Amino acid sequence: MKLIFPAFKENIERNRLLCPGDTVLVGFSGGKDSVALITLLQELQKSIPLTNIAAYFNHGLRADAAAEENWVRSFCASRGIKLETGGRDLRRFSRENRLNLEHAASLSRYDFFAALASRIPGARVATAHSRSDLSETFFIKLFRGSGLQGLSAIFASKERKIIRPLLIFSEDEIRAFLERNGLEFYQDSSNLQDDFLRNRIRHTLLPAVKAIEPDAEERIFRTVQLIQDEFDYFQGVTRELLSRYLVLDAALPVKAFSGLHPAVSRHLAREYLRRLKGNLLGVGFEHIADFLQSLETSRGLSLPGLNLKFSKGWIFPEKFRIASYDQEVPAIGRWAVQAIGRTIALKETRRFRVPADNSEVMVQAKSLRFPLRCRPARSSDKYRKIHSPYNQNVFEMIRSSGVPARLRGLCLLLQNGDGQIIWVYGSPLAAAFAVEDQASGPFVRIAVTLEQK
Image (cartoon, rainbow, N blue to C red; front, side, top):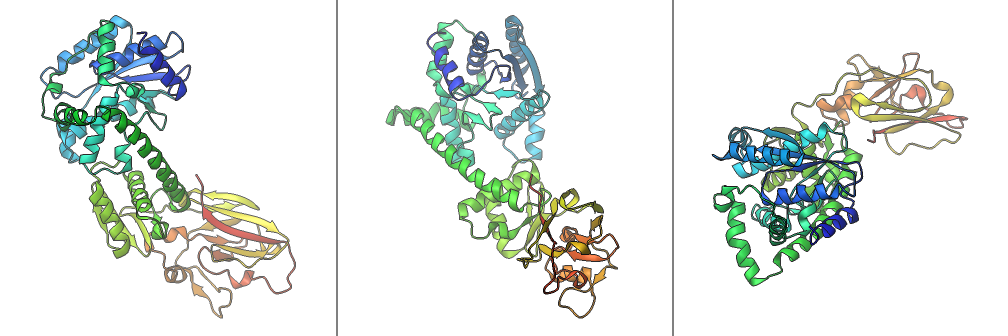
């Protein structure tokens, strides 16, 4: 314990992987790495108050699956460790999602962890990946043609929800720790076979690589750290873009991709699709390429589990609809219109300024009769725009502005307290509310912006 525990504890404290009072869901298979992890975490409890819960997922794929689960139950009972178990029909799951069995097993295990963590506020999931596992995963992702996200997917902490405290140790160091402390573990016989890509990498590729470069695992570890930093940067840029442009977590204007470097465009496309689907199951590099190509052709696109429409400069799911709304605007201030994911802001000012575009208007304060109302346009709505000699149908005004029919509910109509239409977002102000030359203040600037989350 002495030779490995100090480094384990120092790694957790330096990187703030755990805090006093945390509940740790330990991914526990009974194998050598998970036995080492849970033993070290129990030792850590002597200096840091923690609650350790073993989380065992029975893949049910091997003939000895029941024997493995019984061994896990016996191990946890003998050490006083609370145990949570789960499982899934992996063969069916892999068929339904068009995944290979190895990938389906990994995703199912993490779904199990996520479900457990959702029941315990602030719980951390700790997996027993070692530096050797990181090297194996690096090559698996490389062979699949993964980008930065895939190549950095097994790093020390994933958004501070999944931690991997053993990444600083090699497989040899973990084996030596188990032997010194007389710790038994369950030997998964499938680890000795070459049916899965990971095992072929472990048994054939990595030994050959280490024969050429003995420090290969350390170099791969450092490379993954660099890749993780770069991925974090792109992820930050992507999230900022989505916070600026994404409407109702579903509709995205094509202009969000305008002028972006191809690398940023790919990251933005991936994150957009992930938000729509909830995951990226079955979505590969070729689907991202098809998505970006569709931005130029404006043709619809079918992806695994998702059909997209491209219309008049917007992208949205085929089933996307905007709910009806009719909302009161009681006074000057900022008011969220949640049905369309936008905010209407009214600000009083002494000076008149010509609006930059039709996303805002300025009127005299004395012309407003509160409460105002905002709602979608109706087929009977008409008003005379500023600088126009006649009334126009609001539907026609919105249509001519280039908004797709499915998204026209985003064009908020603002109505005065006496029933007069003041303005439709994206179109000019009603002539009845135009500010005449030499008019005196106060004025009210009215703007509609994407609601910031």
